[in-house]
Length: 464
Ligand code: PHE
Image (cartoon, rainbow, N blue to C red; front, top):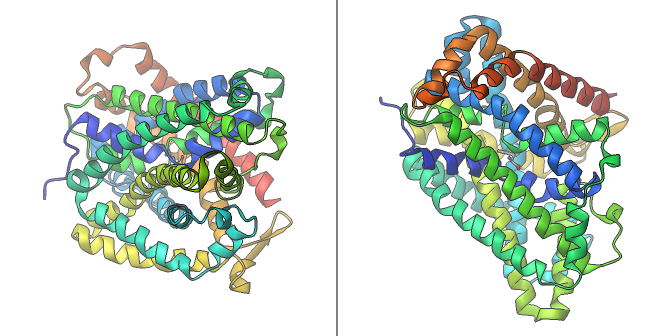
């Protein structure tokens, strides 16, 4: 059967940007930037995006388009031995498990969207409300909705499902984000937040900040999850991979910057004397605990309906961002089953979805409802829940390892000249360019070293 394809370069760009733009850009980035030197962090982040992440991104896309395979197929076909095949497995299991964890978070977002739409702002802003919600039976209703929507999109396939959904959702998301930024900037004291976000303070930059910035950039671009290999396998031969990759990186960065202009001004207009240390450390705390307080406070200014509208608008934006990321990550194991077992899309989706739902339910029960799931393992001095275990193992630990192995695989197993040939296909002017030489050099030398450092650092911090 002929492999499905995106209908154009733009179709791919929006799908890949949909994958990249997620909770990371919308929430984690603004918080990180504000705590770690504002524009100084932004500059370093941008350098990492283009000089470290872009080469990896191009490598994944090229590998996918060349092999026209999912990651397991790609590693098996070119690797030709058991060790590389194992790495291929890792590149399919990792997105599957991260998909489980991301599904749970998307369900929470859907729940908060539902509550905002029902005008239950005081419920959202109640500090204990989050714990109650994630342990409620209501959660499973939202899970059914999110799984249903995800299946609906993925069932449509590449062109009529993923591409169609992202070409509607992504432009909508951009417009919504800009509208919210414009609105927030008109609030009292918003400029204090802008200042906080944009004034550079290089004294805050240290080794840990660099590590965090790079890890954030890497994950935010959906690297090392097999997503860009899989999406890459659907790119047409006459499309220009390099300019598409640059566009995706730029869009993701742009959304991150806009989010900075949203979250921080909102925080300062809520409380002009806010200490930056009061902002939640985690994206989860920010979305589900800190921001709802702002929505509730807005009620005094713009009334109940106005505040509920803004809250719903915000959660809808985050929900769109999360859905397009969720779809991309689940497509990886779906494509692997379709390619590997020759199953139809529908059959692959249902068999995989079943397993995924079970694991997501187990995760949802591990926040205190079921004791042994809530303390499944203890390491780094803390008992960990099933959900935390998935997060630490796959998102934090295996991702940088996967990235490292991918660089080595592309340069030393697949070989530079093949990577070059694929990047030049559909883009003849690329041959001999600075970027071509840079991609080849960096992927074979310092990028794997940097990823190895992140990997070791993460292992030491999390498990010991
Ligand atoms: N890029 C996503 C984000 O910023 C990360 C992600 C992508 C997570 C795809 C899961 C699936 O949130």
